[in-house]
Image (cartoon, rainbow, N blue to C red; front, side, top):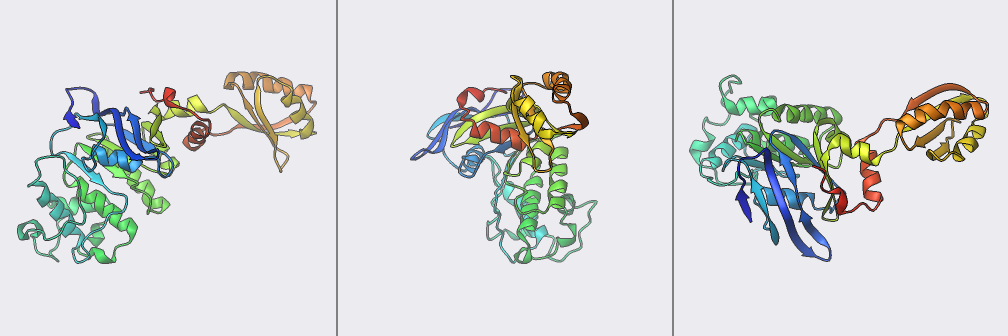
Length: 340
């Protein structure tokens, strides 16, 4: 069941959402909360339920229980699938113009359906091959926005998968949605293309809400202000991206010493505030502590006790990937799902 929420700072909220496919597959009691004008990253392993959840938000799949509340105007939701396909004889500009035309006849949620056929003739005017004015034509403007300006008059049958993903986003953006849902938008893009895409997503958040799923956690950390972690259909964590990192990672350092590194390792293993220590192949030492303050205060004493001279001590970057692995491998359960 989908309803329109009362005025609130949330653009999307779900309550006890269930979609049961049997044998544990599906979604089980999802309480999602996405604020207006934020970029929300949905992460999880394959089969976690990310595509199912996004499809429900877009109105493409039904729920077995629970409800979805949308604080978004009717007709102002667009979704891009993870593997978009288009009629191969259409040009890129025709696909985008077709998307705009289809929206005229849609009074409910707008969902980009890239394989729609038999477009009306007035939707595709101006005629194929016409020169596009990037300053006055909104079709040309949105193609330029996603990096397809030079391919506007090319037939999409010859497009790469990455170009099709860009075109899918252009078809969605031309609808000027308040809520943009992207399922694995960067999966077929090279690193440069991903950087450009997520720069665009960050800019879009100034005027609309963006929810996207990705298995590339660096991309999520780069642009998402909030994150939801799905695993086996359950929401293990929801909240600010930095909170996930801070909550599930202990501070650690890579240390290089002059002297017997193995002596330092033995010394550190005896200390109660050290949670992990390892001697690496290059004779550097990786050590993890219960807190950053404790490590910074106590490590110099450990060097002196082991009779070694410090060469360098570098903190290891705390990443979303490391926090995600710590959360999903640690048997975390629903008690972590309320951090919004």
